Length: 357
Image (cartoon, rainbow, N blue to C red; front, side, top):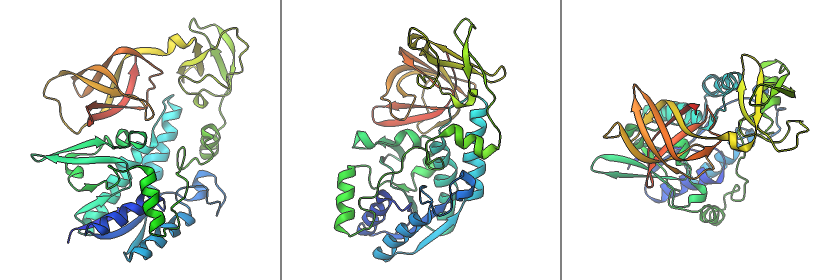
């Protein structure tokens, strides 16, 4: 019997994942990652507003008990703070727009937890992600979920062939409604539990407040300037703004303006018309190829944010960097976010956007 370590967050997706794998004949072990304490993220003890709350651990344990499988809690909080939270904070200091979910998958779920699975002699690790893995002639393909509205392949681009060969995504061919129906039929207490929103360690969604609370540093106000450098007003701290932002600028101008850029060294935020947000070319770094390209130049579909659809682009690789030139200009390409390449349903690879032009 094959043994699998199931990442159980306490949510309905990971609970049904464990149930389905058990039904398929796997020997399942449930594992919940403790990623941070409430004090680290500025939440009062016992608030239950985060995905790592005591309530979530108890929900996961309840489902594991109902299924008759072992359940463990692994404390990865030190590594999560270093690899995810501190990187998130530093990225904003540098004027970037980070994606901590990708880092969590890379370093925690498919890093530390994956290695723990191997130490426990598990053949696989499994999560409740909505994505599919298919093997053909010894090559493993990461593919979009059947339910496009739930597809999470974008945040999984860092997986390697070795990891894909030991990973299971049982929900990849299912809809959320089907998952909840299974949970209800099995009497899982989290069958109607709400999905977590925003970034898990910022349950309020207020990034600026988190950054100030975590660092103990107050944002330094500076100038809001137009594309020619003319001062239009004051901002409350450049780190508090994101590319493409329109609301909260506090400017009385005749036409709508958007955040087009940030200069952290000069502490300025540049605003301009929506047309200034569009660019065709980006450079990406820290690249991971799931399916290495056969040529230095090729056509692919590229996605620059989780909620976006893909767009056709020419791709060029050189000295470890990847250059993506879109057929049509893209709105608000944000350094720090990920760009992920697809061929049909399959993820070719992805990396971090370093610059746009």
